[in-house]
Length: 265
Image (cartoon, rainbow, N blue to C red; front, side, top):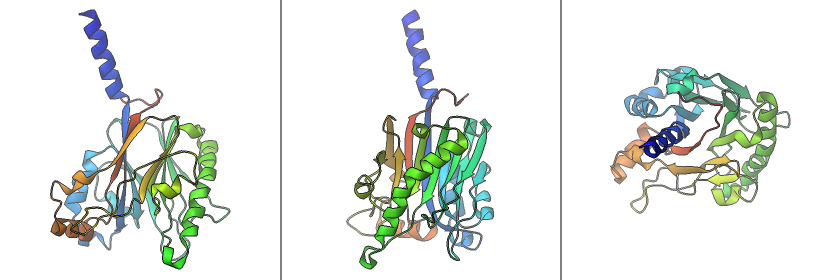
């Protein structure tokens, strides 16, 4: 009986020590486009998860109207007229932790849109990115690769600013490059190789693998594309609806064990 109680104790501890991060590009989310989106659908999805990194947020009002959870924003960033926020939606027990957002000030002008990091507690960070889309036929995919190379600098930057070690920082977002190319540039693990953009083809439900997680090499984690967001309807008709009223990207999810210093109780 004693051995059984010890076993059950460790099962509970392991369950409590896991964390899940969702990253989702919500396609030009703003007060102007909100009426064109299925707000209730997005609201229900945001309600399911306690830590979501959102890309392509064009104004704060739109996203904040879709959730009652804490929403923390980066500064508005972009070189030209088009600018956006990286947003962090935090709920559940994680919202009780000390939450801080650190913005990256790009003195070398490496990034089209500057990354930002959410620090949870004192020893874990999530960097949100939305890298530039470089069309191969125009030869400017090299601009995206330049931003990938710049990720090494931002990890050092955010570690110094926050006091969080680099090996406890995860990068999440829309990289606009497949994992196979990113792996040739960075030293960390690159997760997600399945298609993450919504396809309206009869042959496949997803196209390019543009959305990823970059994690420390010593981190054991599982990552996947959340095709279940389609709620079982994989038809071309439904996917066309999804692209038009929700997003052209599927959410991606990372699950892993967290550092003991972050409370989950």
